Length: 186
Image: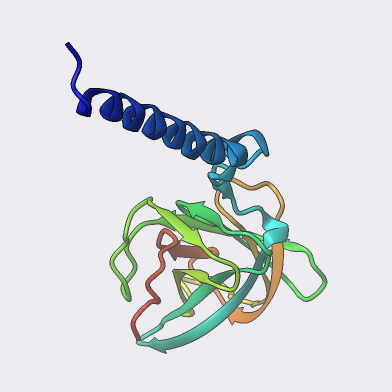
């Protein structure tokens, strides 16, 4: 035997099933329109390439024959990218002739090395390395002025030339920290 409540309950369930089907259909429209979470999700973050970066020297100081400066790597592109690790450095004279140089990566007298780590740079943001050298001749060494600093971002082959004008002794020895979001302290 049926009571009056049973047909009403079955009808209510049928109406609810229709409502749920409508909600699911409306929710599926963006998925069919190419707006799925897979397509809305961001692409994997790309590495910052040399053309993406503005490289320049920032604050610096010197004492007791040791000179240090920050080297900034500012993202000038319209997209976020990342840097990871250590930059390469070299020296040139005023006539763009390569001068002898060698680079040691690690802590400097001015800053502890943060080690290799990923630094994400939103457009307009910068990462920094601390660069140190000596301006005191070793033995009978004749130190000349290096007019240009060649800077190669991590994992890149293309470099940028940055006006330098520093006297680098000890056969062009430079020491540099890994890139970090934190500016070197002075």
